[in-house]
Length: 224
Image 1 (cartoon, rainbow, N blue to C red):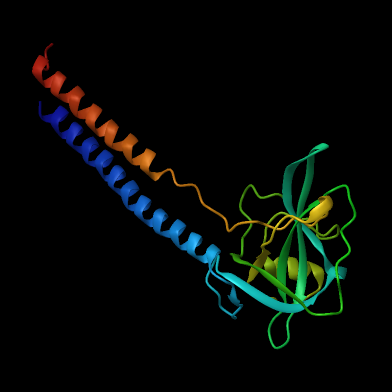
Image 2: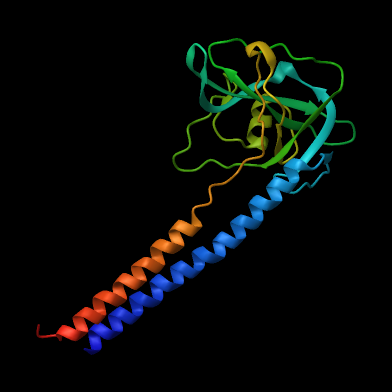
């Protein structure tokens, strides 16, 4: 019985460890979601040079619609059916600070970019989105067409001829515009999925099943 006991004990420790890890992740995720809820309900704070990720902030600056670009690929449902589109990225120049890339919301692929105010300062409220970096399976950017699939401010700014920009993106928050106009900004801060309780139950359940199987095996004896 030595080998079955050692094997069962090892697997039991692994399963219990995975379950406990998921319980800890559950507590961490619940705290994160609570902080996101609190941030969403609170008024925005002025954007600093080093904001926390997903902080709700406001910024005043001069948009550059002449350097507008598209990011990503999203399909939304409309009264006329599904429509493919992307997020509208517009640089915002700020007095005394680095230019900032702002994600102003979803726009359709087939339609021309909406007319945006240029020349005068505007105020934008949104949340801070950390920079992305391309991975093995990332789609290839098309700088000539100003179409990007990785939200990397430095790479996008270089393609647009901007030089150095803030190392994060501001994602605009607001209600959907009337009469089907675009861009359509985000309505809420992002909420990561919270499946850790189900995962913990799964790992603990497997540990219990393993223990039951071993008890049945031990009662029958190795020669059964």
